[in-house]
Length: 230
Image (cartoon, rainbow, N blue to C red; front, side, top):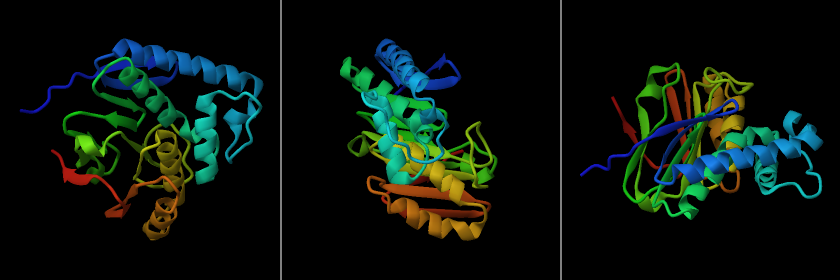
């Protein structure tokens, strides 16, 4: 029998989360707490928010900023490229530590998943018809895992490329988020797909990457089973 999951929406500041977790209270409380922690750090280190390349942290930087900075150094982007993934993972862990058996947290296309039954994670919608039909089918033993996406054609985040969809799978959501941003930055034409796949798949900690540009789909590394959805 298929698992009936209930998803709830939580909006805080400019971020919109989709949450599937029995401890919704713990998840949303952690989102608010982590945002306050990060905003307090940015207040006395504003360059952290503005940087487009890796940046050194000030002493006593909070753990969430350290996670983002580590991901930025591995990928070669600014730390804010990792913020949505980092927040999703922090929120999910709070729900799990509060006793929830599973947590699925989506934050602007960046997802952290830990489940006890199978789940299908869609990769759309996007502007290209293919991106609305693709999904990963995850088994419980493949979680916890993060699936983070970026695009040069949709969303509000800055992208330097023209990629329809770049999705990175990794255990660390901050890393997956930053790597997806870099993957999307690197694709302007179909000729950029293969070199970008090689570059992103070689980043330590990245399990796999998927790129969609026009009618081409590129895959690299160890990805969950890819399925089509209606």
